[in-house]
Image (cartoon, rainbow, N blue to C red; front, side):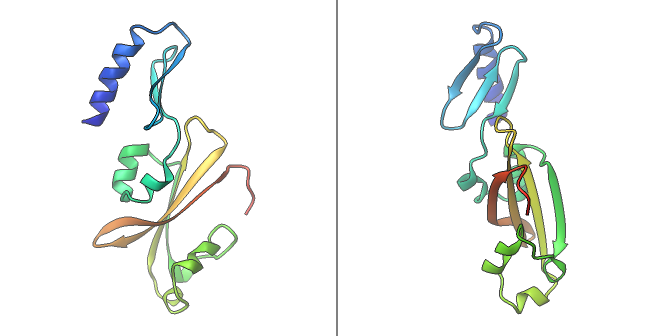
Length: 140
């Protein structure tokens, strides 16, 4: 429903735009309209909002992720990238096969920024518990 409203507003604004200009239509949501390509792009990923959304709702809000990997906690490689899992799980839990879903999105307009969210399945829904924003060239 929100997408239909956005598309309607976008079409209205595009008809009055000069070619090649960007017009900010909603600063709070970070939506930009590219009049030259007639594309609607999410400016930035709102980390606070993303941490409140189930994986399904996050995909509806931010689109298909760049990558998605599911693994068991007891098999996780705790490198620098995943070391923060220790802040959420006890040593006993690390011995259990708790499914973790690691999902990464690319910010559409900040092409060099990635956002990774870790999800745990609770009540049959993937719910977020941690988030990391970093430069795509970062080495972990």
